[in-house]
Image 1 (tube, rainbow, N blue to C red):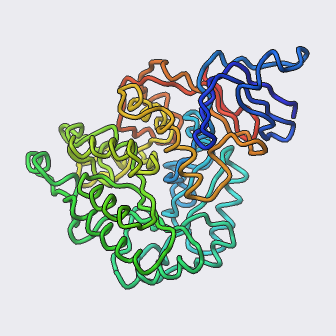
Image 2 (image 1 turned 60 degrees about the horizontal axis):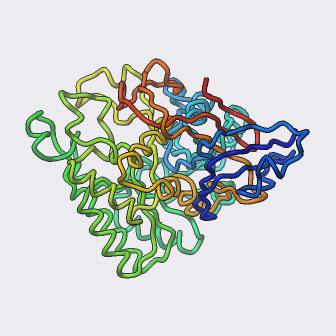
Image 3 (image 1 turned 45 degrees about the vertical axis):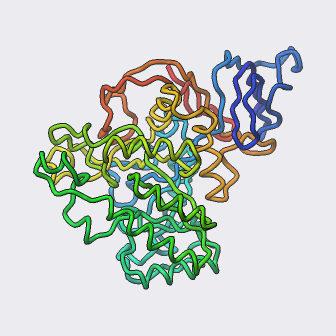
Length: 430
């Protein structure tokens, strides 16, 4: 591979506290050779070919901590190839794949299969997660040590929550000894039983069983109580309510160390968007009130929430073209994560460096991976964005195999122009 010279870019790298006009050199191994204001047209040999970024924004490739892949078992919804294409068009170069496949990822042979498929079919970096419990049933913990040695980055039951406090305390105890990352989807099964949307005025009007905020808050309070005894790496996958934020702030003030995520859906939409039974907005956790949404945005802004995820969970159209009660939960989102996040910047709710940190530097730090930065010697995983370019979400142009976007026809501002993976141009906007 020839060296590449990217010049005249607005470089934003939160890890290194960079926000400046400069350039970036990619060496023959696909790694970053130099980055910043010292890399300029005047400092480079005149004979080399240069890629003029024209003062557009250049950031590290996005790290998405919550992505569902269809392989194995649900290839008709998504596969590694289609996920890769969708991710690259959204500037996402690394993903944590959820283990809720068929069969689930809970043993070494399944990890080997996943790594082979990811390597052979995907153009992005796949970091697989395994289940917390056997078959994600919440009863018996998986073999953390063995799975971690095989390359598992984190442990989660995905869309399920470990309900049994004894099992969860045992998991957190072992995780503290093995330095394993636990990612919990917080929802109490009894309180949320048969629930479809947020409990409140909208659920009453639509005649749908609601999911109270307490279902989330109680699990978070329980697990954070365990952190007093077991000092493990604990991450709350995605929160949705203002009351949960209060619990998190209190725990952090008490000195507890843990991290928190939020879905871009809960930052950009609220329960009113469901309208008359729009099943594409049947999500988990559910969309809640506008007050909850605003509180979540502020929590990202003040650092209470560490990361923003796409919660990319593609569903085939037949699974969504049903009654609200019967429709599958989840939405496609990996390719619209960045432009939706940029809405918060354009609305002056969150500064751009803080926003970029929540989808690059912060998730990479939590996962313990050398991604999400523009360090010298790091793989040149890079995203170039026109932050002001307007466009409209068109379902027919979505690259994911499933087209179930919750934001069809939404006007957005901010478009990915180029995505590089290990120095190679993997996507370019037409």
